[in-house]
Length: 383
Ligand SMILES: Nc1nc2c(ncn2[C@@H]2O[C@H](COP(=O)(O)OP(=O)(O)OP(=O)(O)O)[C@@H](O)[C@H]2O)c(=O)[nH]1
Ligand SMILES: [Mg+2]
Image (cartoon, rainbow, N blue to C red):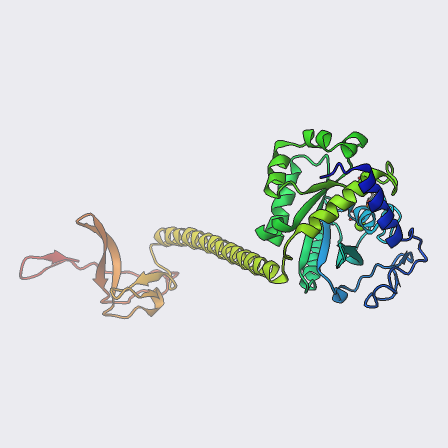
């Protein structure tokens, strides 16, 4: 694994030295080696980005994605992997409060004679800015959709001291890329101290139980991205980690495909749409309930006023025997309207009474009535 023999490391160093001249901003990276690489460009800040470009339409090979929090050291690791010093390679790096890589950048990388697009992505989790995280996720989705040759590896760059937050990050990545993406994932730890970088066992001892569980899930595929202030390109440990990463990447049998990603994406979008729909229904129901309560309260107040006035108003709603509800003003002689409630075998039922006279429609005008009491021939009385 990581502790390679000295000669082997020297051989690897020599190989790399032959392949890659030291980076200088005037270099035109591998244009001669690969005619498909787009001409070197200048990024928005004017710094030369030889060998790195932002044309995501130009992916010609399986992709290796560098993902992780903003400022965690993704571009630095990209540079190490390309054979440059972490802080002095094609990918721009900077100690900055603001995110540095704002658009996905790509550079060609060759591992065991196979070419890949190494893609440096904008920071996914910006603790200071949720909207920016959202944009970064959209950009990542867009980038993935352009990886028509699939994704060979996802290098998830993680700050070593990242404690309990790791679960949230992993869940977010899994939710975004899908469970299958874990089969293509390598964890790269940054901000690791000298001892932990030099000795994998010391590093292991520092893992939390959560981290151990997660690393088990991905078959312990992890490397250390050496601290650029502590290590040089020539240091064995840099080579060891770079080659460990490359071995892992090369060992993945088949690439994670855009279809897999899009399947996860449509499932996620469907779930989000369902959640949004349910939320809309819930808020409509809440609104309806509020209106119902309002009507009920207004009805009670109006009934109270009517009782106080000894009269109903013309817009008072009455229930007909047919169940239809109409305003008092629409009532006709002969209609049977609900006038009382009675109990029938434990069930409340409405009692209806026939309208035989509409006598007093103006509640503001006082009218005199005669009360007639009668006795029918069968002895029944009424008034
Ligand atoms: N202490 C420490 N600093 C590091 C490490 N890796 C990178 N850095 C420094 O952290 C700063 C940010 O590194 P970048 O590689 O630009 O980080 P990034 O993840 O690409 O950042 P964004 O593009 O802004 O998302 C640089 O100054 C690096 O030198 C590390 O392992 N330890
Ligand atoms: Mg960056």
